[in-house]
Structures are given as C-alpha cells and as structure tokens.
Length: 271
Image (cartoon, rainbow, N blue to C red; front, side, top):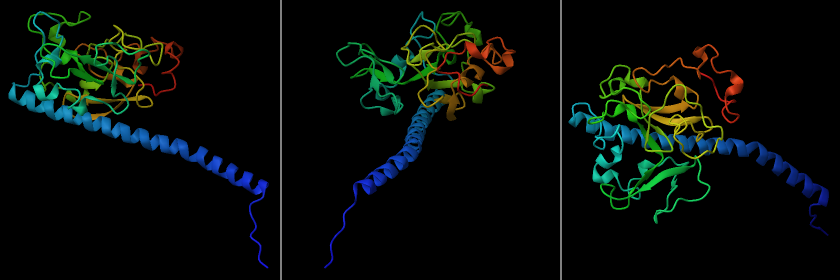
C-alpha cells in the first residue's frame, strides 16, 4: 500500500531558508532594475523637454523663455505654452521618483516633504487650469532678464548663456532634477547636510539631491540628456564664469577636505 509522505518540519525549514537566501540575493538586483527603469523614464522626460526647448529656440533666434519684468529671470514657467502648464495633463514634468507635489490642490503644504516630492502646485495668473508642478528645474543662467543686470546671487547677466547655440553647450545644464523650477548654483555652495532636506535658498542644494542612487537626470543646452553624478554637478558649466575646478572638485587642490562632505554624499564618486 502506497502512503503519501509529507515534508518533515526540518525539511520545511530548510526550504524556507533557501527561499529566504534566494530572496536576499534577488531583491537588490530587482531594486537595481526598477531604479534603472525610473532613470530611463526620467531621461526620456528630459529629452521631451529638450524637444520643446529646441522648437522654441528655433522659433526665437536661439533664445529661451521670457521672465517676469524687473526680476533676475524669475517665473519663466508663466511664459510656457498653455499645453505645457497643466501638471495633471503634462506628465513629463515629473521624474518617476518624485511625482507628489509639496503643495496640495487646496494650497496647503504637505508635512514631512523631502527630495522625493515635486515642487508646486503653483496656481494663479498664467499658470494654467490646474496650476504647474514638477520635479525638474531650469538653469536660471540660461535665461535673460528683461532689465536686471545680475542674476539671483549676484552673477552678472553677461555671464549667462542666452542662446542654445552657445559654445560648450554640451557641458551647460539646461534642466536638471530639482526642488524648485529655477536655480542659480554657485561653485562654493555646500550640499545640504541632511540628505532629505527640503528646498532652501541654497541653489546647489536645490539640485544636488540623491534621487537616483547618487545621480540626477540632466538635460544640457545642446538638448542631450544623461545621468549626472551628484558631485559632478560641481563640474558643469552653469554660467560662463562658473569655476569647474572649484573647492568641491578634485581639481580644487583639496580646498574642501573629503571629510567636509555631508555624510550622505561621501560614498559617491568624486569629480
């Protein structure tokens, strides 16, 4: 007579242990695959912004969008075409890792927001039917103020890149992941001490954020897009007089000792 034999308790525990080991091996790989997919989607969004910017500059003598009168290139988003202003309809505003705006539709700022939140929602005059929100910011030095002679922070407007046809455009960031829709980084600005810090007046801190395991998606003035190391942001040519060999770079001759980097950014590649 045949009798079916079930698992003994020991055998069952062995199977569970094997499954646990396999999961421990597979989970990091699965996380890497998911992160790679998010990075690819992020770069695809930035390439779409590159197409939008390219078409606009082609029709406007190489110039990018306008800015609020009397300001140092503020509120460029007001001058976008209406079809790009609605954050609900225009999903290319959002990196897949940062899709929830820090301000809800009632105008109330959500609690405990951090680098994985989008900025906005900005509503009102010239802001579209549902307002504007997103997780990318423009390099403010690529915009030309109407009357101001300096940008935010005091950099001369003469040092801005006011045309998509500028020399070295492949090293000039146009859009990058950010905690604000505009930014004016400086080479001596320290990264945020807290990895998950919300937006502040530190312009480099607005974009030096760990959304993609040490990288951020970036679109350049030649309309190419790639991932950029968070420390590599200090090597990009944000404006014409930006020192790409500043204190936070390897070429800075140790002006900033390695231990001066905030703890969250220390493990990432130096440039």
